[in-house]
Length: 212
Image (cartoon, rainbow, N blue to C red; front, side, top):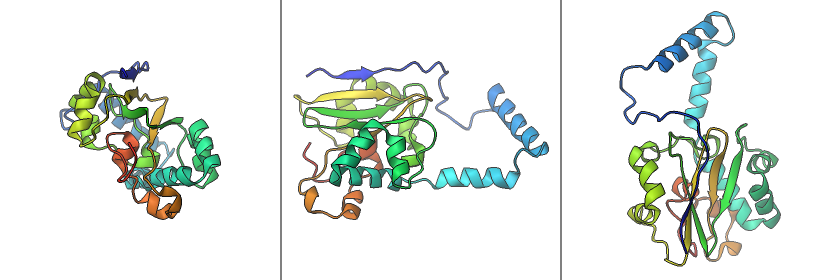
């Protein structure tokens, strides 16, 4: 099968690979706006700090719980595939306001996520993106040679399985729904969630014991 890339229009500039470079004009403007909003009382420095800490504290556990529930509950799995944000809310998980789409892996299809222009990523569900996800090498090579890059992660995809690369944007994020491990129907939901890593939900890895 041929591989494919799902492109989306970003309409944005490239994110620098080295983040400790001198401030850009836009960064200076953002900092000035932050200070102005604090001076005007729109929010406080403490409130901003708490929000940053909240975002930094996000982990893949939220997404892992959704995947595990989808493996054991067919109706929830369908809900997740139709509306990730709504399915998450239904079980008390905050997925944020940006739409997220679930990509289901099958015996014939393996999905993987990239953001070719920066680092758009479902942070609410799987935490902060790893450094390699933001690197120019990953952003470009995953599009042009996905099987080679996946193999470097230790994920060998059979030649008869299509690899589909999905390009995230500021307006649409993705999360991979991996294939369940053998014997999942006999396992507890919490034990299944423990098998679902961040990399599984990006698509560069598969859960231990999964039939891919």
